[in-house]
Image (tube, rainbow, N blue to C red; front, top):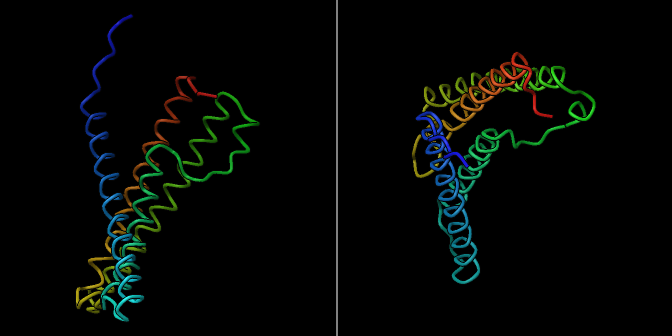
Length: 171
């Protein structure tokens, strides 16, 4: 059995980024659980709460949702309607996958653009969020996550087109 080829620098770098994404998601989810549990305990036992707890939890939900979507996009693990993969084969299937990836990249790019405009507006307006912190600090995840999703899907589009070109579409 021949030895496995070493992972390329790009593959190792992407693997490291994926581990960082997973770590950040785990930390944010843990923080959500701890803060929510503290809020419940404080309200039920002491008739008190963390003043910043509920707004901060809402921000954490935003971050976990968008970073979770980003993590799902890394391996094409998002929810899909997969009718075409059952009907098409070969180059037609690869073309359909490339088209779907390109469409997803375009929609994500538009969302990134408009989310960036929203964050810029809140920054200019001086909108405050939690504990007098600027709202844009918490909202910045929106344009960043959508832009990264768009880039991932552009790369997936290129990969699908390469497979079609080389006639190596996996069924």
